[in-house]
Length: 247
Image (tube, rainbow, N blue to C red; front, side, top):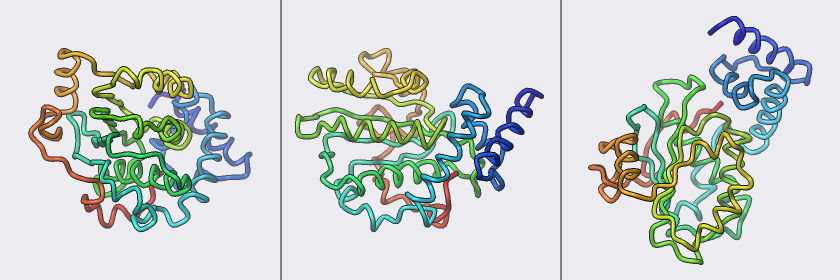
């Protein structure tokens, strides 16, 4: 890293202490995500970091969300974890046709944390570095009106923006039906420019070919142009990594 980056990291650590918290135990790769998310402004990054720590301690006091706490969401088998992309990012697939708006919002929020934590943890090589990213694929094929959940989508993206800064490498949206366009316009209003720039709505064969090439046939299921099988996230065993913290 250059001198400017080193200085910004040092200032961030000092700002965190001024806010009554500590960045001790967190490496530079983790802190860099907060700096990048706040345009390299140490004070703003420190505020975001402190807010994240408080949220994490309240939402995930044990360091992880046990699957037993999100069973209702897992039973639908709508989230799949497929291994690493060409760029070595874990690939998570959401099949929206299996989703229904939750009547239990606290459990749904825990589920979002569960799936994001587990997806990121699947990229760990023995331990977390702090700069791991993920690829999300939102499949809207065979979506019906009863599956539409703007609130759920907004919650997922807001969690990514506020509590998982710079964790999203790219998000592909497949098979968007015409009636979902207006829903997406509403959701988009809640997304930061940096998030919107990472979202690709696949609409034609050229974009589909690029999507397959970037993600990789080895991890993409057959129905998406690859050679793999779908693997539900609850069927992926990350023990003991699943029982660790995600910084």
